[in-house]
Length: 105
Image (cartoon, rainbow, N blue to C red):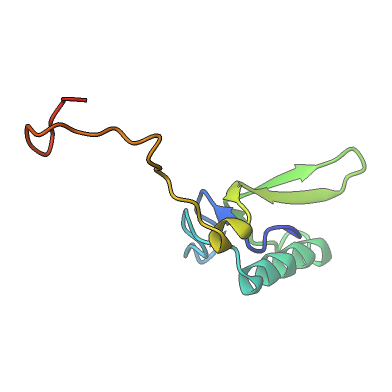
């Protein structure tokens, strides 16, 4: 949770209850959402049995009994600041003159 700010999620992040997604795939973890997740983590430590189940976070307990939470992400915030084109002149395939779905390559 501590390193999520600025990263892009690949899945829903949904606290239950109420079951309303905080993030959907492709959205960025912002400070407000990360602060909420940190609050939920601390609340679960202080009030066992009353914790909120957050779908989309993976809970891992180490040998010492310390619980950590992880989320699947595709990139960090720098990917949004310096976007790269998905296609370049080198990796494009040119289509022939036989219509929009032509096969002449």
